[in-house]
Each structure stands twice: as structure tokens, then as C-alpha cells.
Length: 108
Image 1 (tube, rainbow, N blue to C red):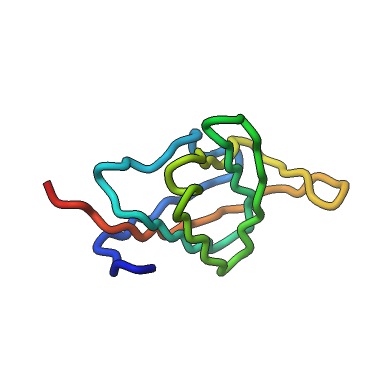
Image 2: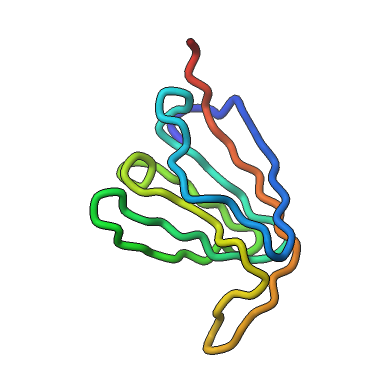
């Protein structure tokens, strides 16, 4: 990350929980957001604001996902609210996931 984060938030996701599609507050936070995934692996969905194209990205345990550039400002991201994920032609039961998200707060 170009700027040293000055905020860290921790979220817990139990099976069936998720987070609605969003773009992190543009005037509130800097140009990069990083999330570390702990516990279970979950897919995150990125959806283009302009075209509605959707891309799923698996967040393995211990991985870091840095959202910057067009992904930061032109794509929403979300974690679907469900208890199972499609995985290799089967259904994978979700377990507890904890994410630690780092951001830089813009003063004012």
C-alpha cells in the first residue's frame, strides 16, 4: 500500500452471513484498502458499476486482497449471504471467517 493505514476493522462472518455490495466511502478513505482473511476461505464478488460484469475471487485463508485503482472506485464488492459456496462442482459448507481490513482515513 502506498499510504500507511491508520484504521483497522475486524469483521466476523458466520455461515449464512455476508456483506452487501458496496464501494468503500470515497471521500472518507484513501485509494487502497487491504483485507486479510482468517478462518475459512470465502469468495468475494466484484461487480462493475458501469457494465454489471461480475467476477468472483476466492479469498484463501491467510490471503491479503488489496483493492485499488478501478477496483477501488468502479467496482462494488460483496460477500454473499449463504451457508454453502459452489466449489469444484460440489457445495462447500462455510465455516467462520474473520477479516481484518486496513484503510487510510482522509481527514476532514
